[in-house]
Length: 250
Image 1 (cartoon, rainbow, N blue to C red):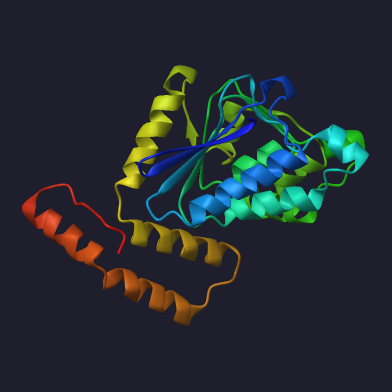
Image 2 (cartoon, rainbow, N blue to C red; image 1 turned 120 degrees about the vertical axis):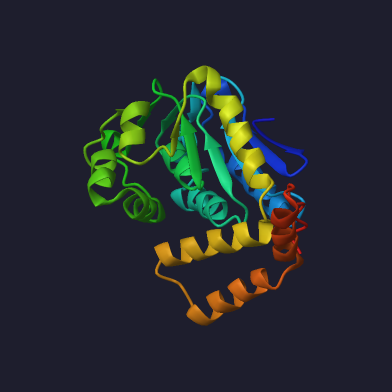
């Protein structure tokens, strides 16, 4: 299976496992990926998602170029995947255990956090092959990385290493290769132990502000729901009793 979903308690992992093809995504793989995301949307027990590559030197090479050529893969289908990942209610972490190319760079950018290593490489090649990148992807690159960095990726086709990606704000965390998996796991465990209603509400509000879609009345209602929840009472009581809170997400 090229796209594998594993759920371990409150943490889910989606593994890209097609190293022979640099974890490029066929139309079938994209559809399976989307189905996995739909499954996670309806599982209240899952609080964090990690997206990573099981093996090989490449995190993801984006959409299958062969299928782009024969018409079985389209930019619209790939955008359906990236939009689904970007709008997942729970926090998401991309663990880039290798290089990222083309749509693979955008796939990781859809996650809330990106963990990588100094030696990894990233570039987006559409200008090298005569392809105009999908509009949704261009918007995401400009919005999240800024116009100048997006142009360096898309128009100039520049290649960046992990240290540069961290300094430019693409990577949120830069780790030695031997520390990457443990640091990502620890980070996911930390988030999984936080109050899920508050975490998901603040993720939603941050994204709405970024997209200039904030509805103040809806935001106030969302905040009030969190502040009236048993989780807040549990959190306050845990502080008073000097213990670790146990949040229920209700």
